[in-house]
Length: 250
Ligand code: HEC
Ligand code: HEC
Ligand code: HEC
Ligand code: HEC
Ligand code: HEC
Image (cartoon, rainbow, N blue to C red; front, side):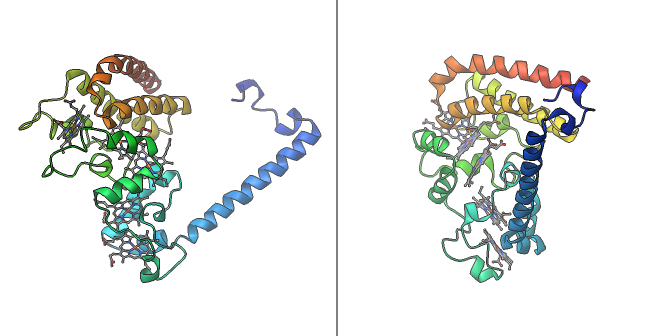
């Protein structure tokens, strides 16, 4: 962070000449790299052609762009395979192209980049779910193209209660429910800040740490670990909730 006092002084005044020249050089390089990545995106025929489609195949692009994966610059082909350099559909949808993965293919797809969630999930009670139970894998819980996008209608508490607390499954223990409600609250709070011009990086980082702690318990369906760890997660979450509220009041 540049302290407020120095903001009006130019970088050239602040830096010794040799350092300033180096800075100019690096800034120039950064510009070239930005342009290169824009060109690379134009070469992405998956996006270019799908954007032109009127139905579902086109809507996916709009939805995907604001998602965490879209913002991180992950291309369609990183999940679906195919060849983004080809402008014709048949040639682009070729090679190791996966249109709609089943559960095994989904785990492989997501697990390529998310090793720990995959390992935890494989050892969890959710895998052992009875044979005729609804599909329960990464995509069933997270969705796909909208991952990380604000959604007022999605609630972890309600989603999990769609199985836990119905028919043969008892409701999740109270602390688990409180933890899920916390996850929903924090997501809402940060998305509100995002709409008002962006949340501070340290708040986003804190949310990531809490999300990770929650995910470890959920991916492993670790009820025992929950008893020990949830109180601490709720405490950290409450602090972050208050920090978000105080930014909102300003
Ligand atoms: C020239 C146009 C074009 C290009 C290039 C293209 N697609 Fe498609 N894609 C389509 C259309 C149109 C559909 C709608 C279904 C159909 O007609 O096959 C589609 C459908 C899909 C589907 C759904 C398939 C299904 O069975 O429901 C996926 C996934 C997909 N595309 C991914 C990709 C990826 C990944 C790339 C780049 C590697 C890509 N597409 C490149 C036009 C294109
Ligand atoms: C993070 C992995 C991932 C990325 C990145 C991704 N997809 Fe998908 N996509 C999937 C999965 C998984 C499914 C199957 C969803 C299901 O079975 O409900 C799917 C389904 C689809 C479908 C068919 C179903 C539908 O929703 O209409 C289309 C079309 C599609 N993707 C296009 C794209 C395009 C175009 C991009 C890039 C803009 C893209 N996908 C990026 C994982 C991904
Ligand atoms: C090509 C690598 C790659 C693939 C494949 C991939 N992801 Fe990701 N995923 C990422 C990256 C990078 C991030 C952002 C990490 C960060 O910001 O800390 C991310 C973030 C996430 C997040 C956290 C999002 C948030 O902001 O709340 C979830 C959940 C997620 N991915 C689920 C999935 C699922 C489900 C699949 C399979 C359909 C998948 N990912 C496939 C790379 C990938
Ligand atoms: C039973 C539902 C469920 C399943 C199945 C599931 N997740 Fe998650 N996942 C969650 C919850 C809940 C969180 C925490 C969300 C929050 O704090 O907002 C999470 C968080 C994450 C995160 C972000 C936190 C981190 O650990 O970095 C990633 C990435 C992720 N999941 C990937 C996956 C992948 C990959 C799979 C499949 C192997 C998967 N998840 C299966 C519920 C699930
Ligand atoms: C499609 C139905 C379904 C959904 C949705 C679902 N679960 Fe489960 N869950 C199950 C089944 C089936 C079991 C295994 C029960 C058993 O082994 O007796 C299970 C087991 C668990 C366990 C272990 C319970 C124990 O007694 O040790 C935990 C914890 C858990 N789930 C948490 C969650 C959370 C958190 C969510 C939401 C993010 C969720 N589940 C969503 C079906 C579901």
